[in-house]
Length: 292
Image (cartoon, rainbow, N blue to C red; front, side, top):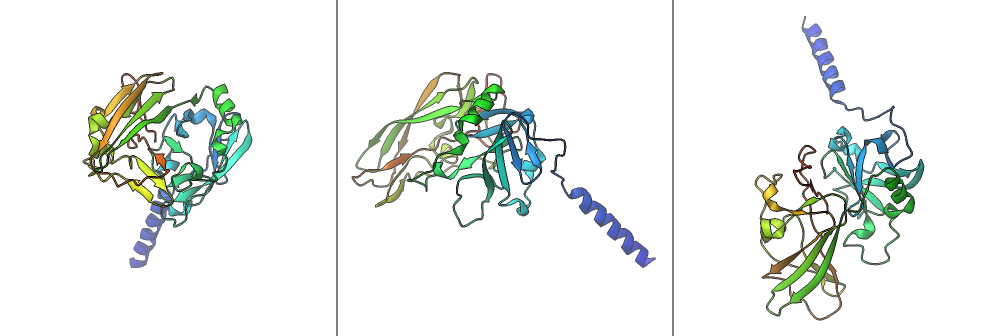
């Protein structure tokens, strides 16, 4: 009787493990005429599953959530992906693991996935801060991709972020003005440094940064305020930015690293929210910009 019970238990465990395994192969999915992304050998996101493509951030928004992007199986690290337009492979990349000691090269997607299960953000190493010179052409901006997205009415221009002016004072104070322009057909709700306060706003961004080879990186030293809980957000943090409209913000740092005279590259990453469920992204007057 004891042996029978052990066998029975093993059968139950085997059944449980079998049911826990996700099969992400989608045999009915095929490469189609529109924009498609293939992961590995058989996992395909075709254009019929895509809602739109935010070209300013190279973020693909899906019509529905996809369980593949909720998968934290370490074996997916370094998996290849390919982007197709009109059934032609335009470029390929890989899932770059967060624990890797090497910097990504070329197109990549962060792994584990950092956005909800309906968003795919495709990065390219030339846009990152550590790649400051000799950047390669960005294959994400291939004309065939743009044309394909427009044919299927999935192209959205997104937002533009412009640093208008910087005022550096000798006592460590620094102020700067940025303008966010909505080039899209949507109204967007965007993070507002005026509504969040500077501490919470800089939880989502590293803020203004200066760089040259002599000084290295120079940054603000303001205290960061974390959301409570960490994955929460509020509509009260957001401003409505209507289609075709621009909005400027003035940000002041009371304690910035000393900036010696010289030539610098200056960066500012305008952040968006990340932890917005698909049912919440559409608000009464516009969409929440996940951006970045």
